[in-house]
Image (cartoon, rainbow over all chains, first blue to last red; front, side, top):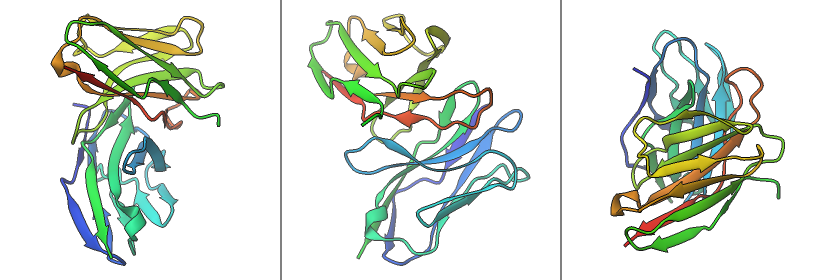
Length: 109
Length: 116
C-alpha cells in the first residue's frame, strides 16, 4: 500500500530534552519525504524535506535522514524549546501527498 | 502576503444546505490541492488540479463534493446537501510542479466547517 505511519502521541518533554518522532512509509519507487509542523491555531508549514536516499533535511535545529533500507524518516532535535510545542506530520509524495496522523508535542519549562 | 488564501475561515451551516469554499493559491503555482482534516488526524486527500485540469479525485469522496479551477488560478470546493459528518477543516495547498516530486505543498489556514 501507500501509507505513512507515525509514532503515536501525545509526547511531553521537558525543555532541552532530546526529541525523536518516528516515521516509516510504504511506497513503490522512491518518494520525496517531508515533515510539516502545525502550531496551535495555524496552518501546516513545511519544516524540512529530503528528496532521495541518504539525504538529510534540516531546519530550526530539527533533522531527519531519508533511510531507504528501513523506509524511515525519523524527526530529531537535540534540545527542544517550549516554542516547539506543536503537531508534527510526516508526509511522502506519490500521485498526491500522503500524510501521517500527526504527533502532538508539548514541551514544558 | 503572497501565501495561499482561503475564504471563509469559518462556516456554520445547517444539515442539508450547500456550501462553497474558495482558495487562492500562490500565483505562480500550477498545482492546487484540497485536503480535509479532522481532529487528531492528518490531512486526508480530496482532489488536485494541475492548471485547470482536475487530475485526481479521492475514491472515498462522495458525489456531493465537487471542485473547480476554471481558469487555472483560484479554486472552489462545493459540498451539496451537507451532513454532520462533513464537519472538518478543509485545507487548500498549492505547489509549483516541476516534473518531479520534490516540490513541497504550501498550505492555507483552512476553512473550518461546522454542520449543525
